[in-house]
Image (cartoon, rainbow, N blue to C red; front, side, top):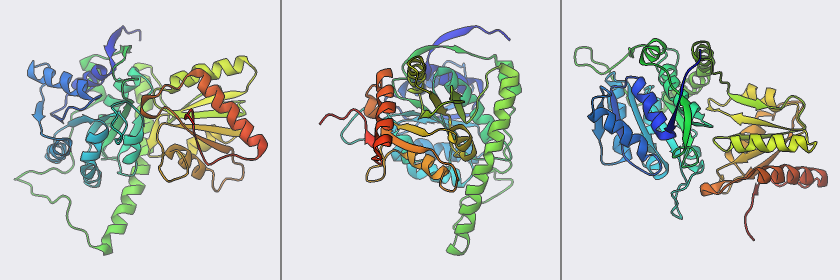
Length: 392
């Protein structure tokens, strides 16, 4: 089906997806660079373009608390935040997941202070990687729009019941105007049926949520949470296939570009993957057998997709936009290394940390990282990680 594209700021595209999802409650606190999402949604609610209760709260902790209460009462619920705001609400993220509440959140990724910075990287997203939310990284405005709508469908599936987080790069995506292919309200209703919670707080049918758990039971509860979050993978794939059949846009946990015969594959999540794709094409023209793997699904971590996409390569260059301080490099690189721990054939994983706090990573930088990784490999002196481009 041929559709018109509309030029939208990507934060506005996210808000439009929330409107089409026919949400009941939005609770959000403004923080750069997420503010435009909250502003647009509040205007939609005030102007009657969206029949939702927009709750003005005094902090991000309160925003997630309101979302938890609203979702537990049976409302389709949304919020958005960034950086320090995510850190403030992090206590409640674990509660939302533990209560199995299908809240959808847009995380406009931004550096965690200190030193103070409003610019973007993935340090905030990585700080809550173990909180039990389904988490996707978007590469462009179309993915932000699509993933947000898909998030409600996936989270509310009776086989899932987990909260859902869409990560989009602060400024490099959030404030950029791009052409986005929208869908009609009727199409959205057909794709996303009315939310019907299996359990909800109601005075006529009392239930308990979030009860105290003794040590004799807590381990079993967490084990089940882990297994069922991993099981959401099949539902995610199922929804993506339906989305493609309805709207023609296909998604997968990792989107591969020129990886079939690649000796080295660059793996990256988020908006910088677009630049990396151009860099890969330029390196191919120079005779380098390079491919790109753009990571979309972060949680549940797509182990088998990682092995299938990267397993044949001699070298994998993982570019993280976050540093595991005191650890062994970037968080994604660590997970990729662990994915091949028991495999007979394993690529060498080179970890680079780049693009911290909004620093640009150019096409030439991706080529430089690939060449440096090969140089280290040939010398047999590959470091655990390298902070790329740091001035001495």
